[in-house]
Image 1 (cartoon, rainbow, N blue to C red):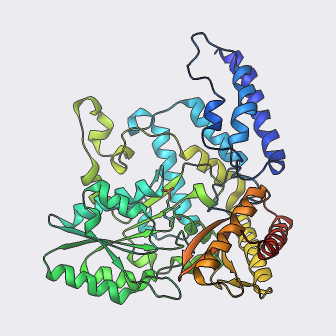
Image 2: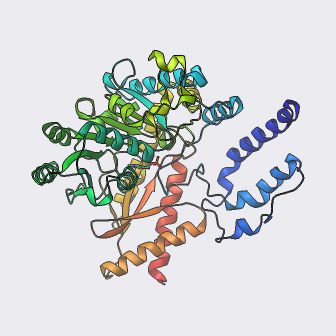
Image 3: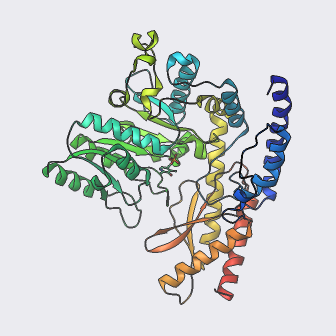
Length: 474
Ligand SMILES: *Cc1c(COP(=O)(O)O)cnc(C)c1O
C-alpha cells in the first residue's frame, strides 16, 4: 500500500469509525450471533492474490459488525467499561503509524521518555505518592493488563523476599488474575491463602490476614505478597488498605494494591478516600486507564515504590541487546519492567487523552458516571420489589429482584431468567454475580455516551421484564 493509497483508505476508515460511533446506539448491545456464525461467514482459506481494501471494508459491515458486542453503546452496563475515545483512537493510530517497538530506550528514546512523563503525570492526577514517581527509586510503567501487572508485582515481591516457600494472600473477592499470577510465577496456587472477608462489606479482614501470616511464618514459609483490592470486580468492595498495610509492614510483606477499575476515580478529590493507606504502605499499585479513563484497551499502569527488585527479577541482557545507553545506566529500559521484551508505544494514546480532556475533563467524566449510577440506585431503592446493595461508591450498582414465595434457588433462577431476557432484547446489557448467597445483577455505568435517559430506560425495561417473568415464569 503506497502512502497515497493509505491516505485514501485511511480517510475512509476514520469516516467509518466516526459513523459507527455516531450510530452505535442503533445496534443490539450484545451480539445476537450463535457460536460459529461469524466463522462460517468467512472464507476457510486465505486469498492467493491481494484484494482491494474495499473488500475488507465491505466484509467489516457484512460479517464483523453483526458479531460485535458494542462496548461503546450507551446502554452497555454489563462489565466494567472499556472506554474508547477520539483522542485515544487517534493516539493509537499514530502509534501504529510510527510502528515503533520500544523494548529499549535506544530503540526509540521518545517512546520511553514520553511514557515516563505520562505515568508521572497520571500519578500526580490521581494524588499517588511522590515515591511512585520515576525521579526517585520508584516509577510507573504501562502494561497490557492488570493481570500482567500482577505477575510483575509477584516476581518483584519474590525477589525481595528471598528463597523459600513463598506464600501469597488474597480474599475470596480478589480478582482471579492473582491466582493466575501465582501459577505463572511458580509460587503455585496451593500457596495462595484466602483471607476472610467481612460478610457485609466483603472487605478483607486484616486480623485474619495477620493470623495467617503468623501461622505461615511459624510453619517455615515465606509470606511474600498481599493483594488488597480497591473496587473488587464483583461488587466494588474496598479492602482496608491502611490496616492491611500495617500488617504487611509488621511482617515485611509486599503490599500490592489492585485498583484496576476504581483507581482512576481518584482524579476526583472527593473520591480519593478510596486510596487511603496507599501512599504510606503500597509497594505496588495498578489501575487501568483502559477501563474507565477514556483510553482504549490496552493501557494498564503499574507503579512501584522501589523499582530495584523488579528490575533484578526481570533483567536479562543478551549480547545482541547491549548498547551504550543501557550500559551508561542513565536510561530506563522498560523491557526490564514487564514480562515480554517488545512493547508498543502506548504512552501516545494516554498522552493524547490527558492533553485533550485535561484534569478537568477526566474528573467530569468520572463524576458524571458516578452521578448516573447514584440516580439508578435511587430508582432501585424506591421500589420495594427490588433490593439494593447500598454500597455503590463508583459506577457499579448491584441489586436483585425479590421473588415472592420463591426458595433461594428458585429466586436465583428467576433472576437469571430476567437477565437473559433483558440481554436478549438487545436494548441493554447487564451481568450478574453471586454474593452473600444470592445471584445479584450488576449495572455498571461507564461509557461517555451514557446519559440519564439511557439509565432511566434501563430501569423501566428491567421493571417491565420483571413483571413479565412474574406473570410468565419459565
Ligand atoms: C478488570 C480487573 C482486573 C483485570 O484487568 P485486566 O487488565 O483485564 O487484566 C484485575 N483486577 C480487578 C479488580 C479488575 O476489576
